[in-house]
Each structure stands twice: as C-alpha cells, then as structure tokens.
Image 1 (spheres, helix red, strand yellow):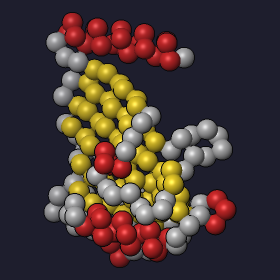
Image 2: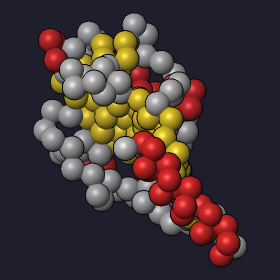
Image 3: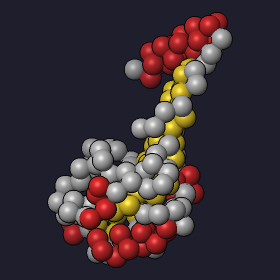
Length: 165
C-alpha cells in the first residue's frame, strides 16, 4: 500500500510541478514534544494502544498556497486528570490566552483576539480540552480517562497556511 501511495504522491507532485505549483503529503512517525511546543509531563510514558498505534505522527499536506501540518503525541500518566490539565494549562499560557473547551466550561463560546475558538469542539463529559495560539497556529491538549487507572492525554500542534481549520 505504501508503494502505491508513493506512486500516487509522486505522480501528483510531477503533475503539479508541470503546472507551476507543488503538492504533497508526508507522514513521519517519529515526533518529539519539542515539535508540539510543549514540555513533557513528568513521569508520563508514551501511550501505545493494543491495536499497534504508537501514539505519534507528524503529518504534512500541501498543495499550491494551502498547507496543513498536524503534529500529535499521546501519553499516559498515573497522575489525576486535574493535575495533568493544570500542568498543561500553565504550559499553554506561555503561548497566549488559554481557552478551556471542556464540556460545560464558560469559555466554550469565547473567541480569542487571534480567532481561536471552541466552536467546533465537542469533548465528551469528563474529558478536558485546552487550546492556545491562533486559528491558524494552535496547540491543543486533550486529557481523558485511560486504561488501567491511567490518564491519557494528547498533545497536538496544528499549523494551517492559506486557510483556517
């Protein structure tokens, strides 16, 4: 399957180059917290689910003047959801105003001066969803109950060029 995808991507890139613009897709499974722009949580371990997902990806899509990059990592900790959420709320504050998009939060209807909002976010009850940045360059932290009494959390960086996700 990867071979076929490479052929298609190569074919698209060749056609795009002939037309005077570029297009492509890259997927990298090796990701660090530095790429997300957040610190590692003390004592947390990378979460790898039983289905073989290793809990990390750096996905880049581009075509012409449009581009999208999503860098994501999943971790697990035995600390509580409030502890993990508080730590990342503080870390996100270094990136700008923090929106709490958690179900029932008073900020769910807010929008920052940079256009970041919770409008399209619908976390399940008991899950915490925090965001900072702008509509086109946002960092997101999701904290939820994990298996075996752990807390699972996702660290995500989204960068969009030419549009707002």
